[in-house]
Amino acid sequence: MRNTFALSLLSLFLVSCQEKTKEAHEETTVETKQEVIVHEEYTQPEPTEPEGTEYYEPKVPVVGPASNDRPPSDAIILFNGSSFDGWMHVQDSTAVKWHLNEDGSMTVADKTGDIRTKQEFGDMQLHIEWRSPLPVQREGQNRGNSGVFLNGMYEIQVLDNNENDTYVNGQVGAIYKQGPPLAMASVPTGEWNVYDIIYHAPEFNTNGEKIKSGTVTVLHNGVLIQDHTEIKGTTPYIGWPKNPSHGKGPLKLQDHGDDSRVSYRNIWVREL
Ligand code: MG
Image 1: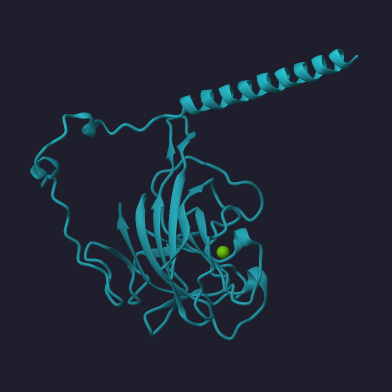
Image 2: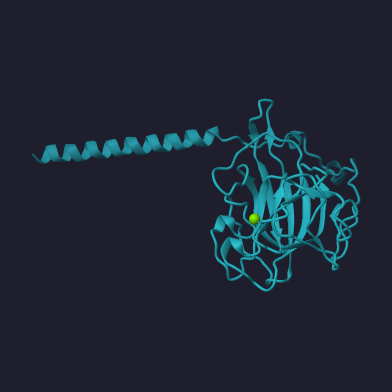
């Protein structure tokens, strides 16, 4: 009887060992499948002099740096407060009916519709400043809602989120209904916010299928809130993201249609 019990214990132990070995083997198998990164240029014989690891061509372009009141020297100015030249309404391509303000900003004119640049862009660095209106009015998604649409279709949310909770994947700085921001970095309502955005467009094959996702990095008032985040598709109010094939597209700004009174200024891009 005692021997039978001992044998049972032993067999249980052996089965357990076999399972563990199997698991370990599977883990090893998975690990060996991962691609190892090899930097080909460093597989050459290693230089023994400092000059062997220094090069001078191609030259790096010289760009005048941005400051508070001046974009970088190679930026394309999309809006500097002087006019709506270069912009039109999305719906019917007519002249922009939003308000052009004396302080060099623009403000959404309610229910006139979204506006877009006439020029189209792919990969880009975008600088845009926006302001939620005072006095504060309404709640949730109806408080100072607008949006910056990359490629005309991927919305980075603009919202007055101060003391104003909403769904996190629709809060300020979210890739709308996809990716919440890493932080909420808004200035007080009525002051100017800054978005600095790095956008890389998705790629599609000749059948129109997506073969590489777009990505977006966003600094909100100097705080990283989207870190090379994958864009999973369009950003609709209802339903899943979609992935229609596209090339370059405009920069689009949203009229949320509820008297949002959001303002924008100092908009420029650098094509990448
Ligand atoms: Mg919006």
